[in-house]
Image 1 (tube, rainbow, N blue to C red):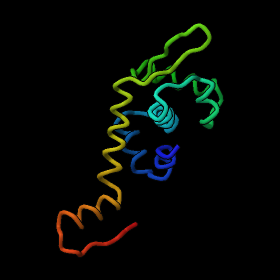
Image 2: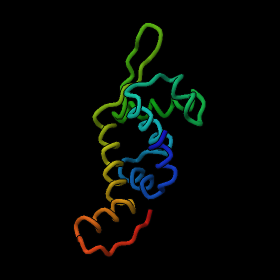
Image 3: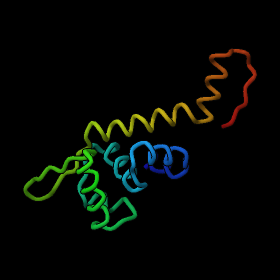
Length: 122
C-alpha cells in the first residue's frame, strides 16, 4: 500500500488531512485502501489494516455517516464503495504530495527557472 506508507512517512500530509477533513489515521488508511481497489469487504480491510473487524466496522460507520463511503448489501456480504467525498480526500492528498515534495521543488527549479542552479533533494 504505497500511499499508506507515504501517509505514515509524511506527517505533514496526515496533519493536513486530519485538520481539513477531521479524519483519523485509520480513516485515511481505509480511504486509501478503497481508492486503490475501488471497493472492499470488511474482511479484506481487516486483513490489511492494523485493527480488528469491530474497530474497522466502527470507523466505517463513522465514514458512512459522514458520507465518505456507501455500504451495499449483497446476499452474502457487504461491499464498501467510496463516494465522491472520499475521492476528494484522495485528490487533496495527491495535490499536497505533488506540491510539497522535494522532487516537485526540484522539477520546478529545473524546468521553470532554467538556470541550472537547484538543489537535488532526492
